Image 1: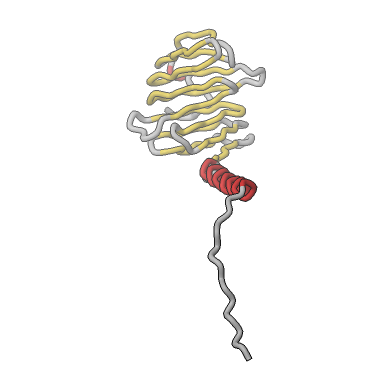
Image 2: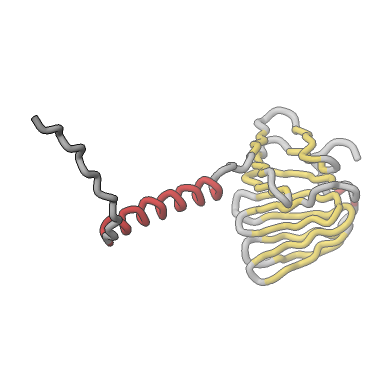
Length: 182
C-alpha cells in the first residue's frame, strides 16, 4: 500500500480586478465622507433663550463684562460663539458692555447686524418691522443693505433691513426709558 502524498499547496497569486478595486475605493470614500461630516457637525452651538412675559423686566449676564436687560414682552436668543451672537425677536433690550469684556457682541435684528465696541445701548423692535437704537456710551456699527453706519454716544437712530433714518442726538434718560435705575 502506498502512502498518500501530501497535497501540494500552490502559492497564492494576486489577481488585480477593477471591480474589486472600485468597491474598496467607494467604501473608503464613504468612510472619509462620514468622518468629515462628523467633524463638521460634531459640536452643535449652545443657544440660550431669554423671554419675558407681562411681568417685570429681566436682567442677565451673558458673559464676563456683558450684561443684558430685557423689557416686558421681549425675547432674544444668545448663541455661544466668537463673537457672542444675540438675535432679538421682539421687544426692547439694553446692553451694558464693559471695556474690559473678554468677548465681542454681535446683535441681529431682522437682516441688520449690529456690532458693539464696548458700550451701553438699547434696541427697540417695533411690530411694523422697524427698529430703534440709542447709544449711551461708546459706539456701535449698524450693517444694513445700504451700508455701514456708526451710531456714537448720546445718539439714536431708526433702522430697518435696508436703511438708517432719523439719526439724531438724545439725552441719557431717553436711552432706555423702560429700564429702572442708571
